[in-house]
Image (tube, rainbow, N blue to C red):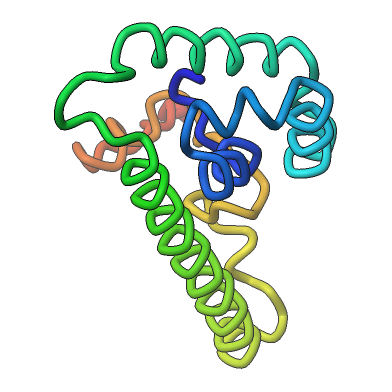
Amino acid sequence: MGEELGKAAMALLGRYGDPRAMLRLGKSRIAALFIKASRGQWREDKVAEVVAVAKSALELWDGLDGCDFSEIAEDFAAEARVIKALEAEIRELDTRAAGLLQEIDPQGLHMSCPASARGPRRRWPAGWETRRASKTRPRCARSSG
């Protein structure tokens, strides 16, 4: 599944972390789970990858001493619960921060700052930093009279 551990992967690993359970679940039900959890981003092509990885894991590790897929599945489920709890806490803190920001900046002036993540991206004129750092000012041509 690569490094794309989004909501679909967490949904699968949180419920069916054991590769045997994944294979019993079947392609169509994994596809339905992926489509629902990823809002359509992961579909049958990703299911084929997951099924291939589950089969490979069984071929490589099944029956080896110390490899307990059900224990690993329990660990995946616990990790998924922790991730969900952290995501909920982050959403709550984001909501709280937005409310506090609204209190201190009701006109939304922070949105015009170049460093604002949600504001418009502004670029400073070329060389602005250099001129400001050296404190040089453009010279005006003197007119002789």
